[in-house]
Image 1 (cartoon, rainbow, N blue to C red):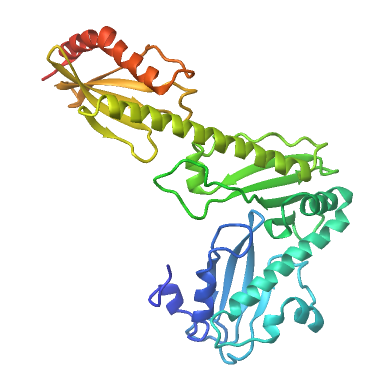
Image 2 (cartoon, rainbow, N blue to C red):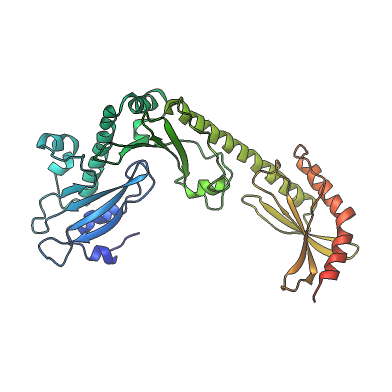
Length: 381
């Protein structure tokens, strides 16, 4: 969080500082969950305090680089702008600005939100400008956008698109789509965020825009909940399919994954609960949030040892990992000797009680004696 002592803000002209601070503290201007970044600052008229700066604004998976030019000698005048996209507001008239950027005509330098309002209006006008450019690119792209926002539950506010490169004949069209979904059914997470978001970036290439590359972007906490950045393999986007069909397909795919993870979570919780009930006097530690592991202390013929159960995200589709660990013997690296249980009875169709009892019985009947012998033989202490 920026504060009054931030070194960059301290070098900004006094009356501009609160305007810029409000902009930089804004969490999201459009679809992207990304803050506006300050790239560079400079001063007009050779003054010590800066009154001109360049901002990087997230848009459609890109960054818009906009320069904002104040005149610190005339603070009552609103700012001028320079845009990296030369096709945008290249020669605006007063009526256009009054219609699409009304806050600029009503500029109030004493209102800390003045600059943010102007940027927001320019941002949405730039989005309209990009949508208008679709008409020059043939029927495919215009149809993609109109059917997506007109015939699905995706609204216009959840879509950003851009043609690249700007100012020339574009070779690439990008659609960034925010997919509003219910993530509350996901299992509880230790780092759960209130800003969970899933966004689909679809890039069209080729002479007829028929080479299509879809990419799914998840917020960090969602990415971890699904098992990592490469855990979700969304379906391919064939050239004969349209966004209006493909986006609901991806949303359905994610919903099914959420349901699967919720089911796995309940089975992991049941597995850990059974162990807590059966071995309540022997529990060493367990994961009470995600139920991903539990450790118990067992004894067999006066030999004590630890049993660690680690439950994978796809449990019970994937069987647990079981490790035995000595409480007496250490390796040459100074760690307690441990041994993985490679083969034990397990079926994903069993109830958790049967899974636990069969695993424990197998450990006592088939593993303990071998483990004790190996731990003594391997011991260095």
